Amino acid sequence: MTKAEIQLVRSLADKRGRTEHGLFLAEGGKLITELRTSHLHVRKIYALEGLFEGEEVEVVSPRDMERLSQLKTPSNSVALVEIPHERLHPEVLRKHLVLALDEVQNPGNLGTIIRLADWFGIGDILCSEGTADCFNPKVVQATMGAILRVRVHYTDLAKTLARAVGDGIPVYGTFLEGENIYESRLSPTGIVVMGNEGRGVTPTVAQCISRKLFIPPWPADRRGSESLNVAMATGIVCAEFRRQTALHGAK
Image (cartoon, rainbow, N blue to C red):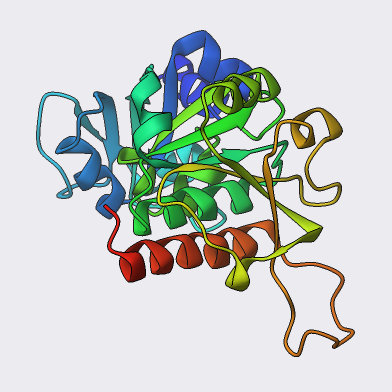
């Protein structure tokens, strides 16, 4: 491998490098195999001998793989993938359940939320500009392949939500002073906002939320942890939305 190739791969650990080259990094045989059959374009694969075949594949030594891998334990393959430019169709917000992330900054949390969205059949996630980059290598690994199926859109979240409310689309958010989620009738479509790990939903975004929800502890008067991890809370909220959708027969 040339020094320039190694520098290119390593530059993709940083958002500036990903933006400059229009590429993100994916690691591991399982994920790369999925990528090759997805709609995304794999530009280059660096792999140990015997793993992959094709014009875009370059066989490298274990020592070179140690220099390329972003993981603590080096993987057996690394792929350079073109960053997709997904367009959010207006009808998606009207006809489907959509997640919105307000300043979620931990890559592990973002990756887990993308994985949860995939599990619960949510195809689109809106992100504020301050939310972690979904093509950060740590996020990509945490999605376990879900990044191939879930479309992530970065936007001025407050403006997007304000337009949605104006169009009659329900916008939900999780708050300590909200309605008990298990006692609330939830719509099968709409936007569900999840806030920052420490600060919750920002004031400007909170103004756009039409339904505030609360995940109660058990029992309700028990004094325990102050709050839930945002990824855990997202899983609970998504499960309750889908449970009610199935219960009431909505599509």
